[in-house]
Image 1 (cartoon, one colour):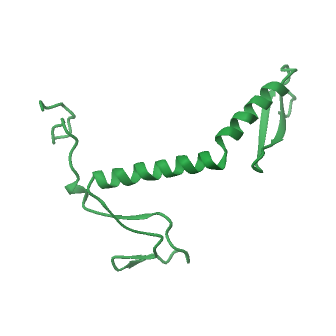
Image 2 (tube, helix red, strand yellow):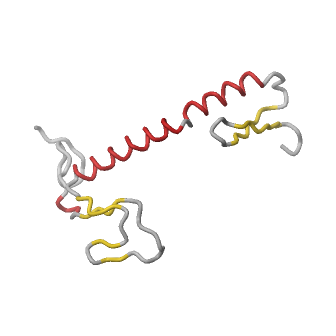
Image 3 (cartoon, one colour):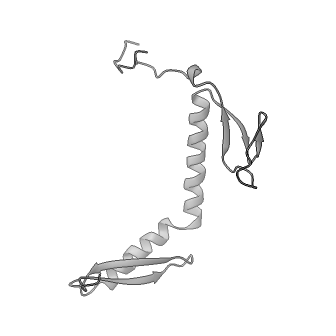
Length: 121
């Protein structure tokens, strides 16, 4: 950017964020392409899209926890099973998960020696 090969411009998004777009100096008519990129960013950065992706991801994680026989012991807590987290003065906003990983079911069709060979069902 110091030698002038790359040009840049900041574009304001409708949700308040700023995007810094860059292009080669030989690209003379960049505004239409830049507007298309900004429109795409705004579409995927919309709050309802982020919320939907976050909730779906949370459900996938919870299903994975349950499928492997772990239990969600708490959420937004500073204490669980006699253990207190004191490094910060606020609650944990993640899940407290408890369980014995040795009890987790092995994937179907694999040999317990870890070779990954498929056994007949």
